[in-house]
Amino acid sequence: MPDSCTSVQLFTPSSPNILSATFCVDSRFLSESMRRHIPIVIALLLVITQVRCAGTSGAPSGGSGDGGGSNPTVTVVVSPSSTNVRLIATQQFNASVSGTSNTSVNWSVNGVAGGNSTIGTITTGGMYQAPVTLPNPNTVTVEAISAADSGATSSSAVTLQNPVPVLSTVTPSSFATGTFSLTLTGSGFVNGAQVSFGETPLSTAFVSSTQLTASGTASTAGPVAVAVTNPNPGSATSAAVDVTVTSSGGGGSGGGQFGACGGIATGQEGSLNGFVPFPADNLWNQNIASAPVDPNSSAIINFIGATDPLHPDFGSGLYDGSSMGIPYVVVDSSQAFVPVNFTAYGDESDPGPMPVPSDAPIEGYPAPGSGDRHVLVIDNSNCWLYELYGSYPQNGGSWDAASAAVWDLTADEQRPLTWTSADAAGLSIFEGLVRYDEVASGAIHHAIRFTLQDSQAAFIPPASHWAATSTNSLAAPMGMRLRLKASFDISGFSPANQVILTALQQYGMIMADNGSNIFITGTPDDRWDNDDLHNLTSVTASDFEVIDMNPIYTQTNLPQGSPPVINGFTASQSTVSAGTQVTLSWNATGASYFVISPQIGAVRGSSVGVTPTATTTYTLYATNEFGRTTATFTVTVQ
Image (cartoon, rainbow, N blue to C red; front, side, top):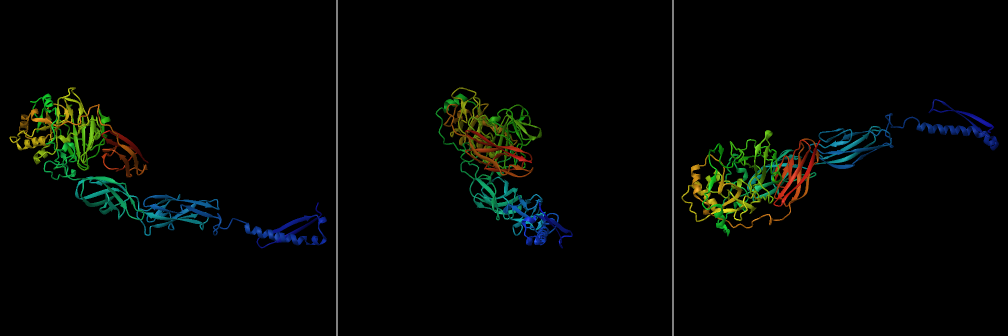
């Protein structure tokens, strides 16, 4: 037990209280000298204790709640520490705070709390929104300031760059060689953007962030990729949109230049103004005046009926309340694309949408009845032909059809072998029609469509389908071509009929459907002279010869091959807000033509712009002579 206790009291300026302490020791272990110095030692200990306590009392300097100066123990770190951000885009910044329990920060841009429209704005959560136009200079500083200690900050250096342009449409999408002007729509365009036409830069004018105009000269025909490149900083190029340059649409003897698809007049039976569908090397457009005769020509003609007359299945006015011939209508880019619902041959049809007017003329109008009810539509702004069979307009603008096919008027499109079209032979109907505008011009530069009563289960190019009505080996295969003999004297016919007969000598006529023997098809037009057309019935089957049929395809020798391969089908954005423009892009090999459904329809090239208003699954259809391949991509609209 201690036997000696000492009490000490101490007053210090840093404390308003008297410090006191009592210390007890066992004197058995202390010398006399040590016992005399105990009070002094205790006093010194109290002084040291008071000095240390004065240095740590109260809240830490600069800590939460005291408003004091900077405390080096509070630190802020912003990530990323530096970054590039494109105009209009966003960038998330994060701030890590240590040294205090209050981890809140206040954000600023270039010292402006929350930023502004010139330098960009930032939310309380650190989401930076780049401005619409580049500031000068194009660098800004994003800063986070500790809410607990205003002296504790951290910043990030942001370099602003031009956006990646999105090209949605190019108008016109088809035009003739020579000088041209284009209007481009999309988003993210900036002043100084450059339009490229293939590898060639065009003279480009900035209209707005969503529109550019460009002009140039095209010397050769064919598809050309058009793209937009924004300048530095952050130079970037859009996905390309293909346009088609056309030159001569075909030709007869002596050649000659023909107008581009855009020159076709709109409206019912609009004049093609010299344009001939499909390239000059297309089988429809080949001059076969010197082609060899088939060895069985005489036997085939006799099977048909040597004395059966040629009959023009078209004319002016009405017969039993219906027009005579197959009508067509020409539309432009203002025509809306509408859905087409299939009632019979959907698995062999090209899907919609298609630019079919609700009042499009139906074969046999104004009383089409229950016949073939063909509807033919030319889109002169995109140079596509749409053909429907068994057509019925529906409420809301859509159409029901037994089958439908789209035709690229600028290319040698090949439908899948054994597939029908709106015609039994799998052919284009329009290409084989006798039209008043071309007869009036003085020349027809293509083969003419005709029908026969009997056909066998076979076809020859350009046909792709049969609809056999006979097993006789002399019955015609679909696609069989007859030529009016060169020895046939046409001089006694009218000028209009001489145009038709000359075409039959130079281009012949192609078997396209089952029907009455040697009925050639044309368009209804009030300018036809029916009495004059009737004079063609003096020409009989014996005045024709069958062009050599090689190859003839049957079920036993159909060509074999692979359908197209789709290597990728994507979108520039998979999740967007309603009304945002999105570019669909694809990579495919071996395709003859493409269709995208819904909203788009027939397309060329490898990309196209869409503006979905609701979540939409787009389907890409790639088709060639051996079949069709599909791929899908869903754009989610939030």
